[in-house]
Length: 96
Image (cartoon, rainbow, N blue to C red; front, side):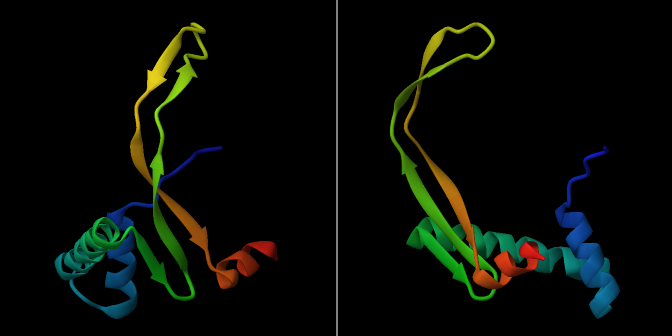
């Protein structure tokens, strides 16, 4: 099975097709959307888009991990990650 990523370019093309905006303008809309999303996550650590879901910044602690190939223990540093919890509407669409 061939795995294909859905990219910003694909989203911009869909906007271009459905709304009739130019490809450049559609691309700018997508770039601005993701820039706003990231800046809000940095500022508030949480972003809720109604009828879609909630993005949350999580603080992961430092821990010991293991290289699965060599079995050598290694320290995994503390870091921040982004978690996504889909809304009930999205969950229901996957249930069918």
